Length: 134
Image (cartoon, rainbow, N blue to C red):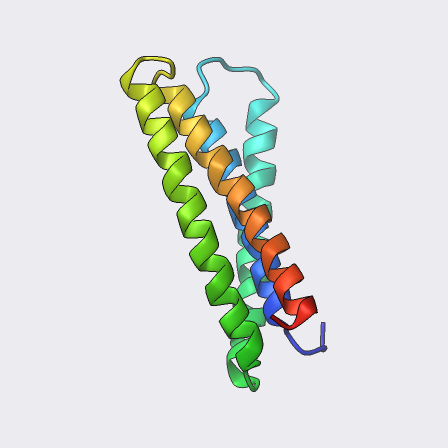
């Protein structure tokens, strides 16, 4: 991986972070146990360590490169849109928990699922804005 690190790549890896968060929440919140769960936990932990080491190197390389100002502005716009989406989703989850539609565990799954979905939406919005040069 000797190529330049793009902002699109760094934004896209946030999806992996959200997926890892979802996996770790599943490991913490599950109510049953099977023997193969330990293998899944070790695999996720190993992947997490390797991924973080690779990401640290990519972020270090990105910090040394010149920044694309238009891409940074597009990322800020995408973040602004996603903040508004997350605000609405969080209020809906909180309301559903308040009227006992969701219990605590299901509200947690809804929240980490919303974070995962939001990471994907953020990447898509950023890619569209960056490709059109908005």
